[in-house]
Image (cartoon, rainbow, N blue to C red):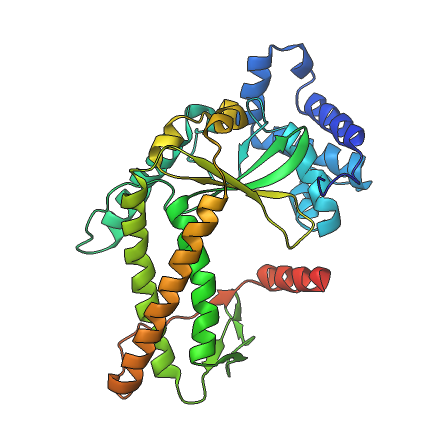
Length: 352
């Protein structure tokens, strides 16, 4: 059962239709292709008009062109899914009204990329160019599917969903990371505590100063975490290479834990990405669908191997590591804006 069945779908669809008319009175007289082009590439003024109407129709909240984005950012979590659903109908492309919940380059839209591979490879090239500019002696890395996840919104059986797109290798590393952090906590118990400067006013905001208390084992903990990070980085590369030989599969799973309808789309390799078009996302995924049990089995193996690695490294650190040898680390200040601090408090209040 969809988690948003309590929302009036007719009300959402009606609000979206009104919002599109407000953005351009001619919208419903256009061809479907022109409508899709408008949704994907609408300008800032049209976006603000749409948000004004959606806020008014769905939350009975008035706003102006000047403050509508601020008003939108302040809606409660309980209202946000309804607004995001309606907004999807004013923005999405293709059969499933997909939108990519990420920033696009100027003058670019999702319509500029036919397949998932086209977008992911373009993003890989962008990231590589940025690293070559910013990192001295950077060694170029090979392309593998979805090194980092992408987030989408879409309709599944006419219902609103959030979605995460990632490779099988990246999914397994995420699972390893969760299990590894829990295992490290078992090996070296520690807490996160406020540092002496946490919350201290700083130009532009407030200092974020959170320290680790490991009862004198801070250096050992840092070393173990560093080795775990290197293990995950190396393991991702090995898995990515290994899965190139797998069939082009898609594995899906609905996640639990909150009131948001959310589905993982996990792709075995780049061959799968090449077969899935953004405008036909779900219908292209369907013939590639594979049993998630295959992922679960691989995950069990990887997690157990990671724990065994951590046990070995913890033993080595206990015997051979010298905590008096301090690693050089560049000191950094993390400054939260006043708005970010308020957003964290708002989220904490609503979740608790």
